[in-house]
Amino acid sequence: MENRVESFTVDHTKLNAPIIRHCGLLDIPNWGNLVKIDLRLRKPNSDSLMSSPVMHTIEHIFAVYFKETGTPKSKIWDISPMGCKTGYYVTIINQSERTVQEVLEDFRSDLIECFEGGLKLDVVPYATEIECGSYEFHSLPDARLEIESLLAELRSKDGFPVVLTADKIANKES
Ligand SMILES: [Zn+2]
Image (cartoon, rainbow, N blue to C red; front, side, top):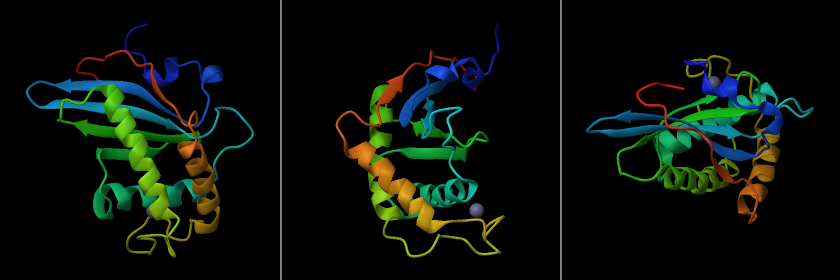
């Protein structure tokens, strides 16, 4: 069927985690492209969904690293938690003619730096009533445990692979 949402056409029973999976590409002539990533941190439909406070805290850590304090290789447009609590969607601005493989590998190395910084935090960034929509709905201790586990995967030779499975979707968001 045409016009199906890419994430609903993937066989979730075959998705492993953690992975960095290419899931969409939007070409913008004379500009570059947007690379969309399925950052899958939990195997779908397993018993170990991420908790909402952990997802929320890591979302803040991502935002601060990629948009403010970090020196990432990736130029991030957006990172959004998945409603199924198994990961995040990430959209990267690619105006440097990097291949999708290179964009994914750059993002993988950014994740290591981002998570290493996250482990040094004493408080959740921007978790105040003025700055956040649910400022008490965080867990830095549990987010730390999550990040430590993800860092171990990222540092291992075969852990946290990048996966190129998306077909090019010309001028259409997936
Ligand atoms: Zn928030």
